[in-house]
Length: 208
Image (tube, rainbow, N blue to C red; front, side):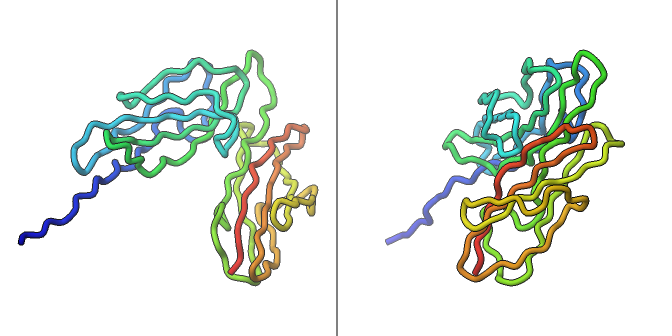
């Protein structure tokens, strides 16, 4: 009796976002999105799902399309921060690893102060498990107005019970003590010296 190995279809490769590039100020609100072609191990036909949202967590979605070409044009609102990513999908609906999420701004009709981009988590990554003890919460945040001075509001707590623990942080890290068996949530809001503010998403981690 001859045995055969069960064939498992593999997902396409991750794509690289090309335009809009990270933290770009688009001078036109009609934006031509493009990204690199994915490669499928079985040479299956590939489709791309592009998601554009007004938050880094990609929950406030303004555009979500599935296309066969590695480009598409959207007409977006002016003077707005957007975040986007692309997933590659083969004919068997195996989703490739998501691309990075890039941020960009569409320019307004007049010169103005732009709100900072919402922060991006560094450590601990969202929905991960860490060891008990001293944990450094780390994030990065950027602003189209490169001369702006940014400060941070930090919310932290067990489970979903967030409390404001710092209102005017100048650094992009904060030390906490994590206890075994607990789950924590945290959120960072970023402000500039002109009062413009962006609300961060809520991140969660659990402790061994």
